Length: 279
Image (cartoon, rainbow, N blue to C red):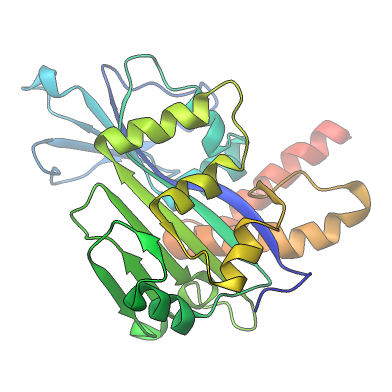
């Protein structure tokens, strides 16, 4: 249920691109390991401690370097180095070719009716050109998930119970995520890097692919609720609320998607660094 306590934020949850030479800011961790096996036609896979993946094939310089930053990695880069995913996209080199980008809208303290959404899609009340619709109910105790579009499509929407997926009992957290590939990914990047970029671009991209104009809960989110960037800077008198409602879910997401990483240690490292600066 969407109420006056529900909040919305937007984020980038996946970024994949190719560049002539992979480079990162100087403050990023240099430690990495080489995987024993390659991926696709890339023979070398370098994985950094923060989750960055750099794919190379020294025998095929025409393939250039391929970088994969999944959702957990992007959250980690934000927490560990203070580099937001939107900043990463805006700072991509001129020769970067983005092959995939996932943008998402998170609803905190609010949920949509998956039964109503599925019924709207099946009855034709939803507006989308996608032909393939799939719903998975409580698969592996991960909550409801609705897919709009084929896994092979260059655009695909996923609506799911993020709290259930992250096994966060007693929390309402719904994610609406649009995956874009190839030319559609490049188009999303152009939107994000435009001089007049506004966070409302992300809801607009989602509705441009799939909209539920007759669904009251959906329209109350997309047409009536203020949208902010994920994990905004807290106001001094609301720090505790911010920690509980924004940082804790981000840490949970990071720990769930990167189980080998101690998310709390990452947070405490950043906390101590900022504390030292204040002292």
